[in-house]
Image (cartoon, rainbow, N blue to C red; front, side):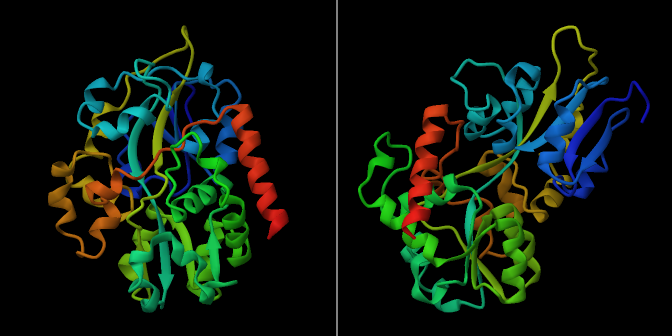
Length: 327
């Protein structure tokens, strides 16, 4: 790579191939095998202008002082208001724009050859406790996501300040722990496809490509919603660092046809206003459209996962550790 060429650091396979291949000169894509490897590489000073492609959970591990505000206000105005909070990395309104949210998704319950459970979709996340899934269920590796799902089972709004104090929560988490074959959505898909599991809770971005080609699979997003996940672009740099213009047209291309179709095929849904997505969604099977863009009432119940303070992290971890001990 030439010394002056700006770079986009990304996890291999994270961006749809058609979009990453369209990255304009002089930008160069630099792929890594995992978010951990990308973060490790980005921790050292970069000799050239650098963009990072990360999920919101990983992006929160980049020190804010190492990020340069993004001049993407025009593009942000094209997005749904839902994208405003992640563009600030969930800082208060009026904070600098540090990220461009190019895709979002939910967590879904992916089922393999279980039409009986699909017919009971009205039970929502409580299906995770069905006796037939004991030892046949893969849950997310993130304790925070599992706790959020448990709160939804109990009918508790995860955004409520008193949510973690619900007296039923510890027992519900212990019950989920007893159900689980594993807490690993990354490799859990392989167990599901191989028949070692009947159900897995996975990001919609990973489920949608499989649902298009594997007739054994069905998925549901309960009416109570789920945590949201975001795919973000961030720019490293400080005042005085070399700069080059951002590839704004490349970003805009991802929001419009024909590349919009390619992003959706990869499970990546740009956070556009619904009317901007309807034409592309109309080409999808009816059963999959609510997984790409949830109905407004369901989307309104989906919640972001903003950074936790040190005290909040300790409280969530203590709750999780207690559930593991009680399982």
